[in-house]
Length: 178
Image (cartoon, rainbow, N blue to C red; front, side, top):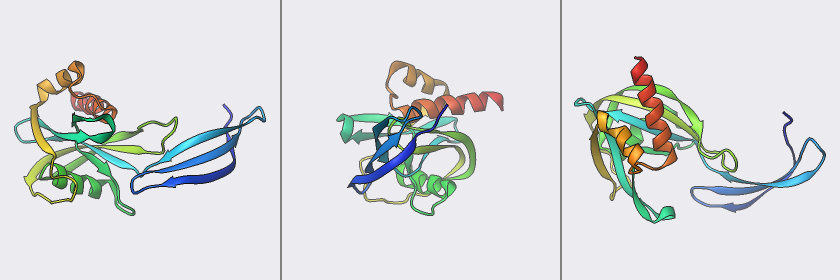
């Protein structure tokens, strides 16, 4: 399969969280077309299990879809921050817990047709209370769900964001093998 060659590229928007780039690309056929690319930093997604075999989920309002969603803890990596350090920071900010054991389960792109965002998936265990206050996490609600009930929340549509659906299925597959 042939790759596309970038003929020109321009940034048309740069916000605090995302940028929008428009690339003119040459296809293998020689035809030139346009690609719009949302630029976003890498993200961590965390499947956290407490000592009572509950999965820690967070409920928060998502403006883009105008509703509260039940999700896995997640967040964007800061420049030069390792995925593991980001997991520790995001867990403390969103759940109030610091994981002492992390296992990388893999990763995936959120929407490779138009977005650069790559999600690093981790299993976090051996949790210790250690809250870290962040400016935009005050309205996040921690929800503990028994592990055996979590995939039922996916099946019912209560957990309906792609990062959480994919992350939970990958984590449960890995846990079954161990």
